[in-house]
Length: 358
Image 1 (cartoon, rainbow, N blue to C red):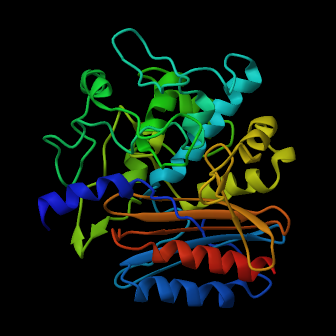
Image 2 (image 1 turned 90 degrees about the vertical axis):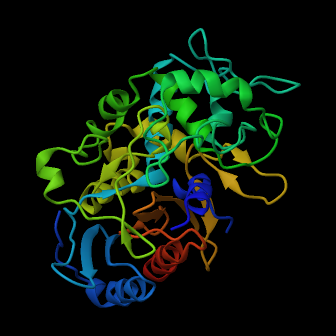
């Protein structure tokens, strides 16, 4: 693959936003309804795919592959920018604890120059709703980057150097512009240089998500799917600086169904108040009408129901999760390939959620 073209996709790969356990007993014909979507994912070019579904209080996971054993609910993949919703949940927990407010200005330690607008400073709400005005990446991130692993070389010292070189594209709070940098800075603002431990302590451990982590344990490595791009096996992404954007986090369909069940039923979750806060409407883009919670994007299904969703991607994986609280339905999908041109796999998730919830 061409190095320049590959690096150019890094802006989108961690989850370009669109404007729009093991397999359990299926019941309600779920196996027959999910299978065509698995087949369509494989036909689109995925080496393997996993779908997880919640419907009528039941969970169902199914996987399929072109060759070899089919993946299942325990297969480990890179999650990509769905991880931004974890960072947003950590923010909501901090708000609930009274340590920050959504309108708290972004603050980093001495030596890190925070860009600011002409009329006001960037707030934590701006970061969590992609309305900070920040570009997708810091100006110096791709300089000298490994084209297959573009975040791995980046250090906090690089971030300190890059921030003064990174002007805002828009005034804070004015316009939606998807920003991996913004969510990376949100993670650093919540737990400077301890983002991964913070997400584990505040979000994944309380929700019982043992495989949702940036640390690939030996037992997870034995269950890991190999990522692909343009038919080639590619390495997993590594990132310690902007990991609040979800750039290096792993998960499984089983974990994601537990996470989505908490989204559908916050009242049963230890993080009830934080989850409810992330799902409330916090920003509307004036140009497109796109509505956002904290991390979550809002969309409308064919019968008018509201879904909340986020996609994700690294160079080896594409993911998408969406849920509809009105019908109690959720869908998550992962495939071990990445497309830098369209997001066909997201459309499969939205269509399946629409079908199952109607």
